[in-house]
Length: 113
Length: 111
Image (tube, rainbow over the protein chains, first blue to last red):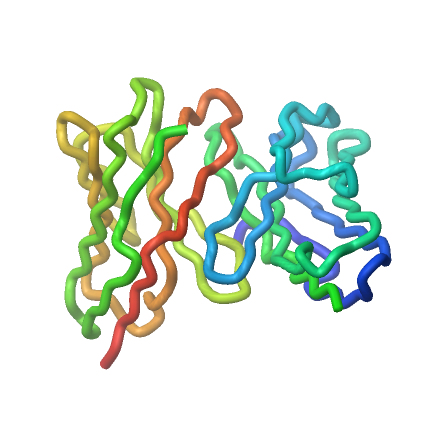
């Protein structure tokens, strides 16, 4: 158990609504990553932060997606005007200790109706 | 990011040793090889990481030949609870790299 927590664990929303997920890593100053995983596929990288700076964004991160990490601690991922294709598991990971190994949280499963 | 190829699925009986091989022909000099395990509705769990030769921990062993173009994850004496998807990843851990998971290998352990 890495201790990375994500909330909520499950979210059901109607198409067109906005949703926000939260990730609480163990450490404030390690790198923090967001991934998306659809059924039968491996996780796909969305974006990552070093402290509060967002250093890389995948082309998967459309204009409707925005991520923040204020003060370099917890992070939020917001999806505006959700679409059915946004239904997926959203995973947060952080690097741990003195290594660059990524440790994942339990994920937030989003269902868009 | 170096592309990896691994079997889609594998079956094993309890108590047997399972070896999952991953090909990564385009691995770069600075790339490490990392394996993750994932159960349904959970985040991936780090298993083991290596650069060359052999790495062993309390869970698994990782064998990497001299050319580093492939690697083999070895799970000794699997149990039913080892049924999961196993991902092989290659990347430069010093660059804050984004992990490229692929589809992984779905391992089914039966009695």
